[in-house]
Image (cartoon, rainbow, N blue to C red; front, side):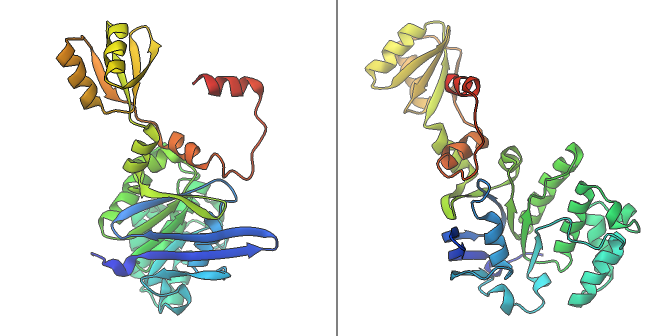
Length: 319
């Protein structure tokens, strides 16, 4: 099945205050069809409040949240428009996995056959008759995703779907999310596991203190955080550094045969070295991890921060 822009999730100027605490301060972003959008930020940044506002569970003080151009409360048969996993523990523990889904399906007029389809999709077919209360966290996550898929919706919102999964489950989840986006669905994934989003998300919305800090592709965020740094390995580091300095490029020695170059591209470094006859064994772009890019973006937006020992500070500054 292919989906059009009716699958979009739009968050437009959301504002929400709980007492004296500002939870959302003009939150604005769009989750587009055909890609996995990661939704990240420090604890207290507003991720859960935003997702609850999209699903009509929290009423914003201002702004709008739309699914396919409509607020959630206006949707007919909402499970066929958007599926959500916000709390994997939100189930009746005495019910079997299949009965849990049958109850949801019946409430939305969804055929019972769809229950068996989604159980198979998430790898729980063999556990269909087991009571959900005995499930591990990873199995409850799978059951929650099965519930989100019941209505075959064009939009999905999943909060921390990697939690509780073993390594095989994490590999499965990466591929599963990619397949959902490849079908044309809009997929929003809230997670604190940056390494998983780096391998899964196409786009990232980074928030802090109720506002959007960054809204860009993962590729763009990594490139921006890397600051156009290039690692050069050469048997003539002093000669290479002198050559690059004359070309107006900043360099620093980071090893006996390694020079880090800042402010230019790898292709230009190669061209300069070749033209001058300076030998080298490697020239590569120095890319930071998504986790490093995330910390750089949210360093000033962390609301709850533990104390750091002096040894840890010294180690961080030495990196």
